[in-house]
Amino acid sequence: MRAFVCPRCGQLIFFDNTVCLRCDTAVAIDPARRDVVALAEGQARCANAAIAACNWLADGEGELCRSCRLTRTRPNDDDHEALAALVIAESAKRRLVFQMLGLGIELTPRDEASGTGVAFDLLSSSRRPVTTGHAGGIITLDLAESDDVHREQVRQKMREPYRTVLGHFRHEIGHYLFTVLVGDQDLAEARQRFGDERQDYQAALDRHYAEGAPAGWERDHISEYATMHPAEDWAETVAHYLHIRGTLETAAAYRLRVEGPSVAATDDYAADPVSLQASSIEAIIDTWLPLSYALNAVNRSMGADDLYPFVLPAAVIDKLGFVHRMVGRRGAVAVT
Ligand SMILES: [Zn+2]
Ligand SMILES: [Zn+2]
Ligand SMILES: [Zn+2]
Image (tube, rainbow, N blue to C red; front, side):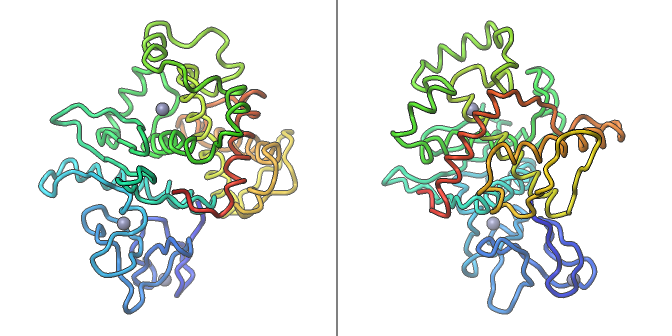
């Protein structure tokens, strides 16, 4: 994530802010410029400003922003509990959309007629079951995941080292990106790394929940869940690619730099995501490892869990390299 400053007075502005806390200037995120702007005469906030605490600009009065437009279904206006969860989910989704824009990937709202594009169903499971997942461009999130107690209980039950709403979105968009980034000519390479994504999904799911991850999974998978099915391995890898790129962008924006102890850090600390896009996965990982070690140590000093509780073996770095190539090749072309 970038670091933003008030266009009027230079004060630090956070991603969800609607006003500068020093000079009272009304501010908004302009997704087209990927920056914070002072709300000018004639400019309109997103129509979800009140209901979803959205601080993005829309094209016109009463219209939705580029992130909120992607939400196809949300709780009813009178479901106050679910709407509180929606605020958290939409904020995480704006981070996802903003990161995609930085990678040159424009997510377009799903066109029901042509079956292209992406749509989000953000649903409350308080009255009926909701399964978080992706199917044919539709990303469903159980809004209960916005609740810290619920999410932590599930995380422990599933023995996951990490579970966040943003992580869900990064994983599910990964499934979608497979359909738009990996072309027919790439399938052989993808299958060689991740396995054949046409494998029976239900059988894989049943086996995973009956037997768990195979012994030694750490050698070539980023998580136990990634061993379940080739499609899940790909989605987990994309999620980690986005974790790493997003956190490196934040570190660069704040000029964070790790010079020790004795881990191989490159001098070439890329300050902007575009230059990292052009660099190799090795350069990205060489920058990421010392930073993640340092940030884990900082978190432990506060008695908190590791920021990045994962190990990246060579096979996973190779998979990340494949994702990096697929994303980089896309350039600044809209995903439809
Ligand atoms: Zn200001
Ligand atoms: Zn919005
Ligand atoms: Zn998945």
